[in-house]
Image (cartoon, rainbow, N blue to C red; front, side, top):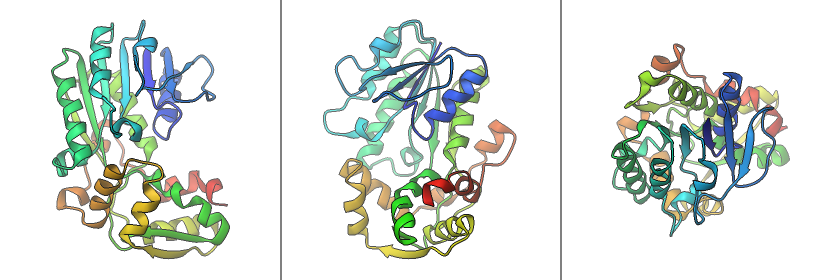
Length: 279
């Protein structure tokens, strides 16, 4: 049985479907109750609370662990989840962290993620580490303003990074969970090209068949908006990357192609599949 954390999110949902479609027994874990594919067991659990994963690990042989924003809040101890898995019958962990672990190792949230990676490496379990860059699904932050005013408001409108479709992350995670050849791999996951927020707005407009105006936010305005849904330190780290990406952060990684045998999906594909959110 495979346990999938963050199972109702942008990565966990398609991953759960893929594993169930491959005939694997899956336990989907999320903070709140939610629909899951037929045959999948769902458990509502707060991973930051006492016990964390222990109640859902009985009988599990593999674990997909996603470090959501609340796992970076003060008092959270994400490395404890690795220890809980090691103490159970789990033999394999696929861990989702961030490209920033390699490109900005001294940011506060990146230090915490690196610590979790290091604990996993020393756990005695089989492991694979996935380090994605920015998610295409972060464009959903703009959905309300696009619906109401046909406006995308974002900082750094003309600075691009190779954002990745969460569906590609899910497919890579499924491949790693189902094929042991990826044990010990550390994969950097990006989209096929750099794309700026302004060009993302243009892609959404093309999908809608209606004009969408771009409004450039200041860094302070963007941080205030992001801090409503993530710890302030994580917002700062994210804005550092979006505003001044390093050469490593604009590099298109070959790892999606290497694992899936096809190139990663462009942002326009993600926008087309999610157009209903912007109508």
